[in-house]
Image (spheres, one colour):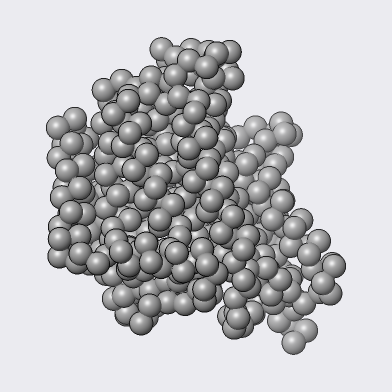
Length: 406
């Protein structure tokens, strides 16, 4: 027993130690080349992700499963907020130079999450269990419904061709409704048995346990927030040294860097606790990115520009947002029955990789209509699909048991 406790402490202290070089570099104690910076800040993000996953496990005995997932999802999405808000602020002062970057970064992050993150979680689950179907609870029906509502509104934004300040009220309202549901979710029964660092963190008396978990969440969130911008900037510099276009770096490389905490935490949850908790974290992250991240763009831009002028789109940004909304709508329909299948995960991954391989205007529209066509086909084949999602979401709002479908 004592040996297990010692090993747990070593893992926790090792995770904290991995963040120290990043903090020292960030506060100017020493400098690092772009390549070394990528490694330093990458290790810090991974170490913080381990700490978050252990704290999330330990917190299960105190608060509801749904609220834990929402807290974790909000923490791990912080790097994406930091990067996109930075671009939005700069666009307010120099739109000609930075105006295309906030939408590029936001759409890249959202498409990465569904096209790469969701399939990654499923395939880790499949490798562990060889099961070709992953089912999840009623809470995710509410989250998927929130994604659906935000997606429908995103199509109106595409048609308008601008982001305006009142978009924040609509998207913020969707997020607040989702958050209201989480705060009224009852604590789950029968949590997974704890072991290793999570068991150690949960072993303290209640007041001390709360304090320790809060400090770990805050410390990990702080390191992630401090590491996001320099990690992305260093990664962009490394990419530029290889001759990669800056727009591509902003849309794909920077979001891949900022999504790293989400992917690592989700993978750890799948391997250590449950696949449903892993996919739930990424679904919750999608709710965050598809509401709060989008609404931050016109607000930060307006503050920076000193006016309530709308944030305009060019043709490329319109294409990107239309494609992102189409992918989101297909994902909502695909998961409407609260199941994620091998075929569905493979389809999301293949379509995402396909659009990366052919980055041209006409191809983006082709993939947009493929997503919309596949979604329409699913509804035609299974007409009850959306009704099931609506029914399960209502059950979730009424606080019914957060079970999984049979």
